[in-house]
Amino acid sequence: MKASSSWLDEFPGRIAELEAAGLRRRRAVVRPLDGPWVQVDGQRLLAFCSNDYLGLAGHPVLAQAACAGASEFGVGAGASPLVSGHSTANAALEHDLAQFVGLPRALYFYAGYAANIGAVPALVGKGDAVFSDALNHACLIDGARLSRAAIHRYGHADLAALDAALTQSPARRKLVISDAVFSMDGDRADIPALLSLCERHDALLLLDDAHGFGVLGPQGRGSLAHFGLTGAGASRRVLYMATLGKAAGVAGAFIAGDEPLVEWLLQKARSYIFATAAPPLLAFALRAGLRLIEAEDHRREHLHSLVARLREGLAAALRGTHWTLAASSTPIQPLLIGRSDQALAAMEGLRTRGLWVPAIRPPTVPEGTARLRIALSAIHTRDDVDRLVQALAEVAAEMHKPKRTSPTETA
Ligand SMILES: *Cc1c(COP(=O)(O)O)cnc(C)c1O
Image (cartoon, rainbow, N blue to C red):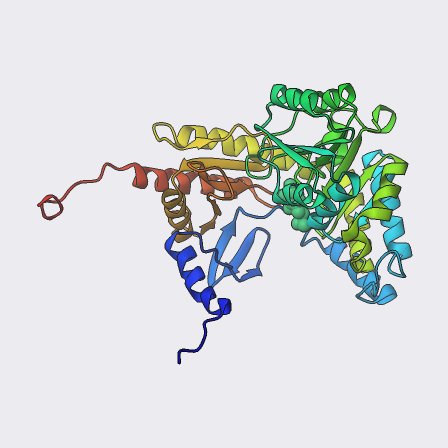
């Protein structure tokens, strides 16, 4: 008799299906070299893929602070923050973060993913409503699904559609969730307009500023500060979330806002309560990093000048091709290519020239909008950017060449 088949036997076939559909993801194994240079499979590459926008992830001051933290606190927190994991180090970090962004209180999570999937279900549930921008990050979407509130997805940045959905919703508790800087497009949400809709409809706004914190606003205080919506201008209708593994160079995330809302998250966010607190040594590194973010405007100035240089260079280099640079003023500079296989070919073309820019394809981005996601950092030099522009010009020219049909092919 044939052994009965188990569903566990299906995985190799399911992986093969991903492979056949061009959806199988690969993991590069990376060793850091100097600055933006990395070694991948023995090859030295100039990388434009990191979200370490200010170059703090490899900064010696942060590394030394982490070492000091490890010698004082060891390497692990040992327990959930609601048991014995809330160290004086993490408490000091929360205090500094709240001060830095100009909001009453902050809660530090071990990851941004955890912050969003914990916060949304803590705030709304069955019978309530979530309103979500179509291009929001996966963890906001997952948080909304976990909450079991009704989900209204509005077209990207379509505030008229959001207004209509808020008007029609009978829910008493309404939560609007949005990236502040959209992670695959680099464009920015109209935060004052979102906030005024929330005021009008008695809704709460949860903003994810993973890509704005450290980069935007005065002294890198983030997207809310950019619009003057912090300090005396703060609204109790906004919860401000930012991650600390990107521009801040370390790991984790925080949610800041009005005292009772943040206290509620502490009481109810399951990803906060049922997870071991982040290692205190990270809080040491983060506090050292915050001081650099605040004091060193030159990192942001250099970064923004690189963005301008890249955009100017590419505008000239890509004239006459159908590749277009997205309208973005942030260090996320997506180059829209269209088809997935073309985006992959462009990535490969850059790689043979010693450059690493990731191709982002559906389903991560909408169908027909496969792209190269160029991410700039303050550790790049002007020469690095020029090299990328030159290489992209070559790859684009190669890929836009009209194909000659050989007689054997037509026969
Ligand atoms: C990276 C990212 C997150 C997740 O943060 P982690 O700290 O990496 O878990 C959340 N939201 C956005 C928009 C992101 O880009």
